[in-house]
Image 1 (cartoon, helix red, strand yellow):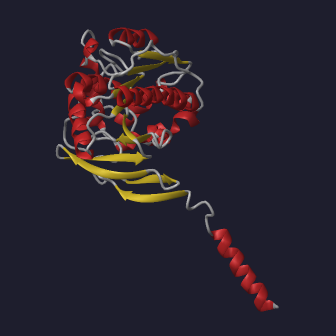
Image 2 (tube, helix red, strand yellow; image 1 turned 60 degrees about the vertical axis):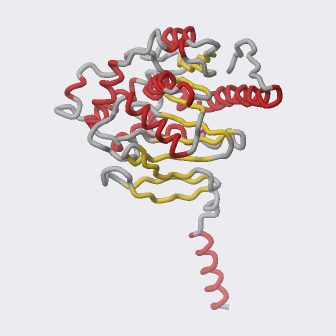
Image 3 (tube, one colour; image 1 turned 90 degrees about the horizontal axis):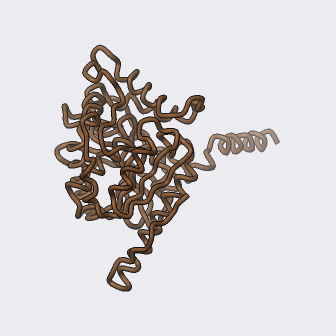
Length: 325
């Protein structure tokens, strides 16, 4: 009897020590691709999300991938990383697969000495698409990411199937008034933290933006200073009328930087562009993720229908503007 009890206790201890959900959620420990700052962890959900490195323009970029179907490339902003899009990567599979990139100097990508500008980021993204064998992805960009994608669409119009411009501007976006001092004497982590907190409406629970704060150590003062300086000098206003790709513009009603008025101005310049307004601040994917998932999904389905029409009839059916959300 004593032996039986001992065996039962051993089996029970083994069961308790096991994670019964391990097949659904696994963690891959990955070595940082940039300076030896940290080790990064990519979460696999049902084995779908994976992180890997792709070298472009002499720089190793880290990307998250999930799902199957036509490619969407997600581009983060100046104080975020690819992780901000992780929950959307497989959300539209099997029709669309998601790829979220850490721009040079951010997240788990390599930190070269320079090149943290809208123009260079755009070149890196085209080189990434080339390396992945993607001719015309759907591009989704938030904040600085949206600024990068407007420049990309102007410089490489044949490489854009569609655009989703989130919380962005078509001219200068000034997020700090003393750019030269970022990194010396001002700590880039304090500047980054202030920008993130100011992006949310007053009273927002810290839990909503804590994941963004946690990623701040993954860039440095040079990256932040150069990127913010590039944003402060950007201006494609009056040029984006040349963009002919289907475009969705997304804005938060409480955004005090990339305001609804600016979003309407972007929409007015791009023929057929659609506009959706959220009752949020700058990062609606954090404040209202389910509606964001739905709005993006509806836009993607219009692209799918247009592609089906092209295949069946050899022409794109251009109907009236659709309303989302």
